[in-house]
Image: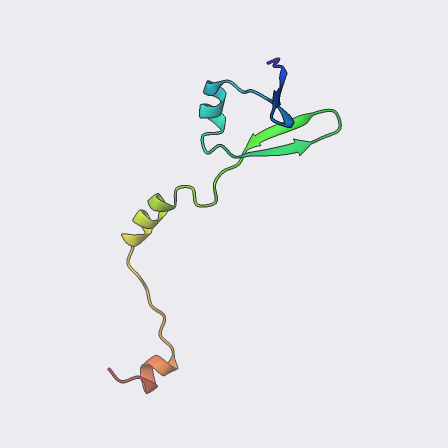
Length: 77
């Protein structure tokens, strides 16, 4: 894809079509890598992506507690 470099305030930038932003950069965060003869633009996955799904599946699993000597000998219920 060929695009023009445009003036954005005191900087310059390129415009990406909406469908590319929606497909690859939905969280609107990109990693830019500078290589020998090219610039690579890659989407960044958010750190907490899909945590809601993970918590839901984990909450359905039984919780196992580890016992130690203190729990057996020292603690009174």
